[in-house]
Length: 460
Image 1 (cartoon, rainbow, N blue to C red):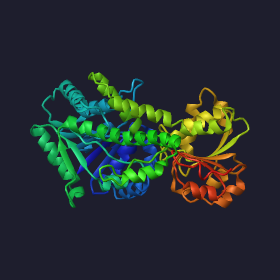
Image 2 (cartoon, rainbow, N blue to C red; image 1 turned 60 degrees about the horizontal axis):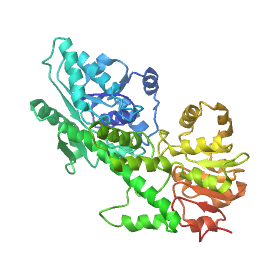
Image 3 (cartoon, one colour; image 1 turned 90 degrees about the vertical axis):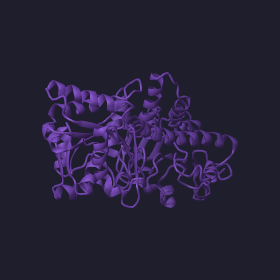
Image 4 (cartoon, rainbow, N blue to C red; image 1 turned 120 degrees about the vertical axis):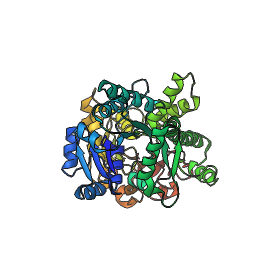
């Protein structure tokens, strides 16, 4: 099948590469010439395990191409996937300018029937707007009867496991119109996704608005679980309970399960923050206050300060002369994504308090340099007090304390002897609860985690 992917960001690249891997002919469009040049030269603009290899073999096989040619992209695909960015506006609503621009181009250049697939995360009602824009373009060209149908096919990809999620989906949501064109589009999409349904049926067919809503509901639920556990973790510290034991206790209940119950420094990334905000905004537009999601967002905002508050409580708010090792910059492991990463909050606060920071991350250092320059645009001199290193142990040399922000596998089994030999003082602030307090104490460190019961293990 000939398929066009509009947008070569995270969702577009994974979708295009994985569909090409099934034998489809994929044309990936982007207006960013630099990004297209990078892809055509063999580079990949994002870090995602396994993605580079999938891209390479399908480019070599001639099934995957990258271009900025809009007219050629519309001509290529009988199915047009819209996978462009939907950033939040200042009021929390979703900016649809790129989605509607893609729709405009489809209507402007299409000469035969198309299935237009909204793959980007978009608010309820976006498919209607896309349809109106395409109709307007067709009418201006004098071809108002040229057939097309807009399908909602939200993505459910986890950064760091996106290739696996796409090739082994737990569900494929298809929102289609209840008319002849919609049913024809559904048949096309079923054909496209048939390889994923050979073991068992994964497709969930529904109306378009329900499909659009499903994506937001899923992310809001997961964000709620995270904030719920973080709020309980903060209380656990006050009452002397251990949130990790609590997690195991409640997670064993099959009605609850273990997923997304880890306490930490809050969620970040490209999805949860903006999707929760967008759903809250949608509620307000329809006269409904989503109080629970407002609380989820507020808890998450405060939780990103959790490590900072622990550090201030121990050393005071004047950190001049203190050096902190920081492990983990990306918002989660197996990605270089720094969007809404908790590390940005920690670094910003510590630098402004006068501290020096030596940071390590397996893949996100380049992106961290870029976003921190933006965060500290009002005080660029602060950037002189942060240094990035290639080895995690090197970051701890001469440090007054180690701060863990991202749970990379590289950090799970540290060499405690080497770590202690290089540090000036033996203090660990663990924002991801990677270690058992007893093991850290036995290694000779003071340990401050999120919601862990540490008093009985602390050294005098």
